[in-house]
Amino acid sequence: MRSGIIFSIVLFSWPLFLALFQPRGSEEEQLNSILTHLFIYKLQFVNAFLIGPSLIYMMLVQLQKNPRGGRIYTKMGKMFLALYLVSVSISYGSQFILFPGLLKTGLLEQTKVWYFGSFSSIPYFFNQWGYFFWALGALLLFSRGIRLKGMLKYLSLLYVASAILSILAFVGFILHHKAINSMTLISGLLLIPTGVMTFIWGFRERP
Image 1 (cartoon, rainbow, N blue to C red):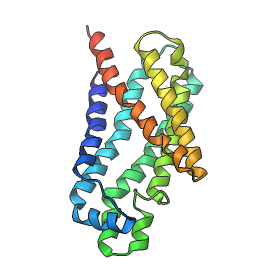
Image 2: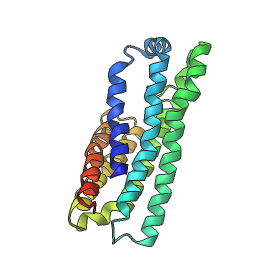
Image 3: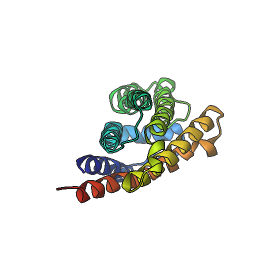
Image 4: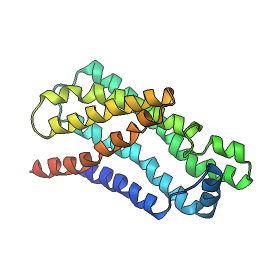
């Protein structure tokens, strides 16, 4: 129950931060706008930085209720989740640790390389790469849960659907196909109900 609450709070905070500030225009205009609103921009990515740990924590709690988890699949799945966490931590962490310093130097080309909003940047690559790892981990850990009954079945269906879209998005990223790459957004939207469902699940099972 606790893991669902934590994940929901972190995830629902993301659109709230985006509503406070969203850079527009060309990349140069976006960078200038970020420089003016740098504190809010950094807060956005501090929040994003917490999504990975809270998601993994929730998934591991859910796995404790899966009697069909094979030992090899579980180990491999957790390994991919660890790779996911490292990748997205570099991606999001760079935006409030490394990127602000580069932005203040005024070195435009170097700054663009580390700007998350650029599809050709290093942080965006790590983000897409990370969610590809997450997708592999989710498939290994939860694909068998589809055969079960109850809440774990519905959670597993959401994870598998989200994982498939994340893999498609990564293929789109490799092929430089923006429409397919945009599946990342839909994949993320599918995860929104998981926190609330986990909270309800835990609440029902309280002694």
